[in-house]
Image 1 (cartoon, rainbow, N blue to C red):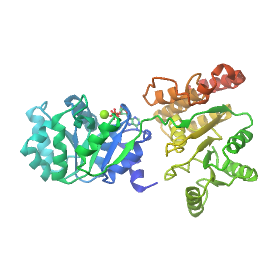
Image 2: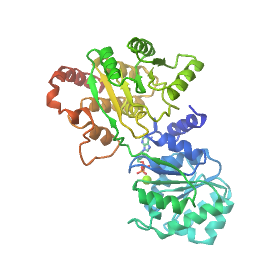
Image 3: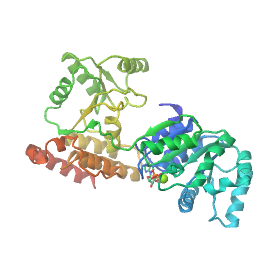
Image 4: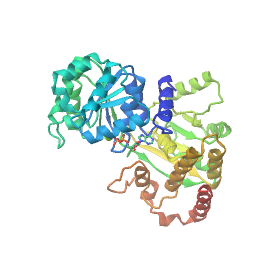
Length: 425
Ligand code: ADP
Ligand code: MG
C-alpha cells in the first residue's frame, strides 16, 4: 500500500471516524493528496466531501473550498470543527465576530480549510488575502454550478478559473452530475485547458454480472466456473492462505495457469505473481484479500469468491477489480453457513472495540442480505450505497432466472437466517 494511502486511512479513522473508504474514495483521496488536478463524479451521498477534506489535512497550508450554499458550508465547517479540524467560512451569513475569527486564524496560518462563497471571489480583497495565505489546493464542490447550460448555474463560479491561475495550485472538482457535456464544460472552465484526472465512479458497474450460489461442492463449482472462462484472466478469492494453495493446484491440474497469492508469501514471490498477472494472457490468481491494492489490470474478465467475503464493501471492491475496461465481466460468490460462522467469529474474536464490531456485523449482514436476495441483486447492492436504480438490471443471476426456480436453496436459506440471527446478539 502506498505510504500516503496508509496515512490517509489513519486519518479516515482518527479524524473522520470511518472504518474504511467508500468505493472510489481511496483513489480520489490519493490523487488529490498528490496534488493532481482532479474531476470526480460520484453519486449524491457517495462521500465527496471527504475526498477534499482529508487531503486538505495532509497537504501543506490551506485548502480553499468553493461551495454554492451557505447552509452546506456551515454544516461542513461545524462538523470539521467538532472533529478537531481548523476550518472556517467566509460567507454573507457570517457575523462580524465569525469573520474576525477567520481572519485571525488565516493570519496566524492555523487554518486548514477555508470555505468561500463564490461571490467572495469578486472582491480584490479576497484575492490578496488568498495570495498571502499559503493556499495549496482549491476544492470546488458542486462543480456543475460552473455549467452555463445546467439548472444550477452560478455566474460567480466562472471566477474560479482566474483564482486557479492567480494561485497556481491544483484544483479538485466534485459533482454528482455525470453527463458528458457538463463534464466537458467543467474541465474547460475550471482547469484552464489542462486535463484533470477524471474519476467517474457511480457505484454501478453495469458490465459486471453478479451471481451468488450456495456452497454445494465448492471445489467443483469453482473449477466449473473457471473452465467456462478458460484462457481469460481471473481472480479467485479464498478465505484462507491454505486454500489459495490447494485451489491453485487444482486449477493447474485442470490445465489452467493458476498461481497462489497471499500475505504469507515472501515479497519477491508476490511481486512476481503481480507482474505475471499483469502481462500474461489468461492467468488465474488464487488469492486472499492481500491481492488487491495496486492490482490495476483493466481486463480482468472474472472474479470468483470461493468463500464469502467479510462485508458488502469488501465484496464490492473485490468484484470491482474485474471489467475496469468496461468490457464484459462475470462474478460468482459462494456462500454457506460455515462461512458465516467463520466471519462472525473473526469479528467477535478481533481486537476491535465494541462499536466497530457491531458495525462489522452490520456490513456482513448486508452482504448476507445480498446473498439471500429474492430479486435483482444490483438493486440491493446499489441500494446499500444509496442509489435506487429505476429498473432491474437484467444482468445478475436473479434477473436471469427468477427466484421461484431456486427451491433447492431453501434449506441453505434457513441455515443462513439462523446464522444471521445468532450474529445479532
Ligand atoms: P456527497 O457530497 O457525495 O453527497 P457527503 O460527503 O455529504 O456525500 O457524504 C454523505 C454521507 O456519507 C455523510 O454522512 C458522510 O459522513 C458519509 N460518509 C462519507 N464517507 C464515508 C465513509 N468512508 N464511511 C462511512 N460514511 C461515510
Ligand atoms: Mg456534497
